[in-house]
Image 1: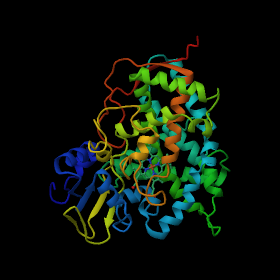
Image 2: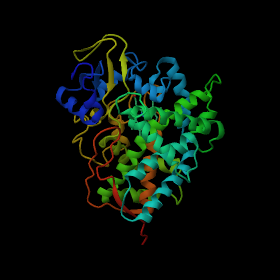
Image 3: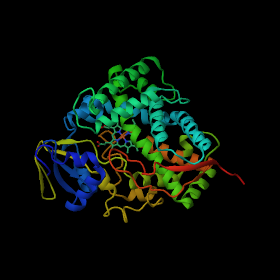
Image 4: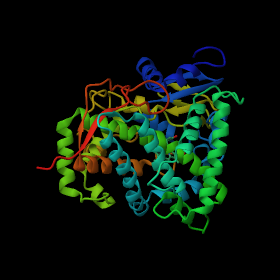
Length: 430
Ligand code: HEM
């Protein structure tokens, strides 16, 4: 349980992936620790994960640490529960319908093309730092309707400062990481506020969310939009950046797989940005994308919840008021569900295999029903990843020099240690 009060907070913050995976291996699928004065129970594997996601058992209200709520806003959707959560989530989900996502693809591919052309011009290069800007630019286009033809470096830097502060001791002074994060957050808020006021947001999630209406005509107020959009940057950036990084690694490391994905893309895609209908026909690329989300550390755990009453699972007692979290990484690396779980196998998670898994076994973006706390960006990521794979392999050749491509430690979505060294050339067509 760790030291008094602090408990195991430092180990958790330093490397939440290794921490939760090693404890699950040591203690089994349900175990507890102390983090900053709270008893926190972690739930790994499909059965325990489902138990945590059941709204009868845990609420998200007051679950997350105060400093995280302060940074993102205490009224943001991951920290709400009950009817307020349901109503807000319903409106937010309108940004992830098929029609909405189809309308984002041209702008997204304008951004992909801009970065990939730069890497082609650079010859052999380390793309890690650019990938973070790429993830930011996509979020910025989607949630602040920024111009896909340019990078907003100033706001991206503020955003990095915000992220750093989320993983630092929460002491709000001008020279601490947390204090700097609060100031950067305020600048981001002002930026988003101006974008919400000024942009119509055509072809972006901002536009869709401004127009969203519930069954009784209810809509997101300007303040609610600003709160949720800031959180959307936070929710989307790390996952997007890591997802593209690991896609480049797997096509670099598995040329056979890259050839199969390319053959599929040649058969299904046209010359420009892929459409939603075309992407849905990329079965192999979809399977590879799912396996990337399973095999590489992108999100360690869900947000925290609070037990609503005394609970019992498999002989373990969980007291009312104790906190809980779904152990995402430990569930994805669970050998009882996935044979040889540390191995990347690009054809492991085809549509039939996914359908045959128990509920809440494949949980890279959380679990439970979509109107619960499951990530609404799941449909978007699982569209963008195969779309990128198909488009990239169709148009480019990739050389991947030998490098240390295991995940660097710490934080959310650690990138490969090498920073992803690649050489991209336009495809040689015979
Ligand atoms: C690979 C990319 C992504 C990963 C791995 C990921 C993962 C997650 C995880 C683990 C959660 C927490 C679930 C829980 O607490 O039970 C979450 C929640 C959330 N994600 Fe994502 N996410 C990704 C992309 C996105 C994108 C692109 C968006 C777009 C806005 C997004 C928006 C959200 C929101 C709004 C929530 C809170 C949902 C709620 O509490 O109701 N995510 N995501």
